[in-house]
Image (cartoon, rainbow, N blue to C red; front, side, top):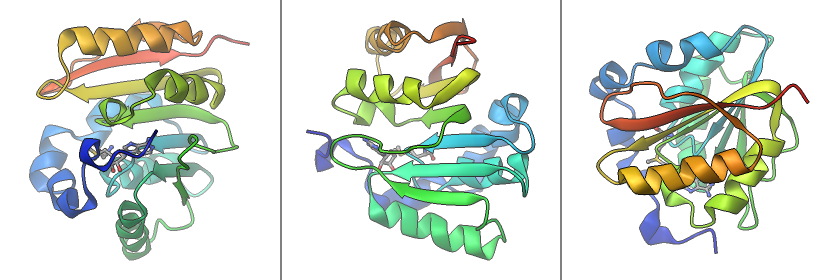
Length: 187
Ligand SMILES: C[S@@+](CC[C@H](N)C(=O)[O-])C[C@H]1O[C@@H](n2cnc3c(N)ncnc32)[C@H](O)[C@@H]1O
């Protein structure tokens, strides 16, 4: 079962995830700017209303691609409108996850799962699929909210992620969060 509505942050709270206060606390340039280069393909898993997708679209530029994935069609509608309004539509490819997995085909240089892994019931299935979507030497940043995710629960997620073959690189410091940066081996 992947879609358990009570576990998922409803699209009706989208405003809470993308506003000037959040952009100041979780500034995308500061948190992920160092991992992304022009022309790359990046994955925003559980993109929500797209604060990170929009910032990553600017980072990858016109020759790059952001694949923004969400399980809620409404979140993707909100992001579609924002990407049109900000002239970033061509870089942002919207993708609705299925009940049986993510279902993306392209591989990415960088993947982000910001405040979403705790909403996924089958973490092992999800993280195994993410690992297949990352290019050799590509990186994967998982960020979880301290408020909802205990240290032990986060460590379980880190262990599962490492069991997919991803290598733990660092534990970035992000306000109110627990975070881990992983990397795919050179293949
Ligand atoms: C708390 S929001 C975070 C949104 C965004 N990453 C951010 O930090 O602003 C979590 C998002 O993950 C999405 N989500 C939850 N489970 C998912 C799954 N299995 N596949 C794709 N998206 C999922 C939810 O619909 C929601 O939009």
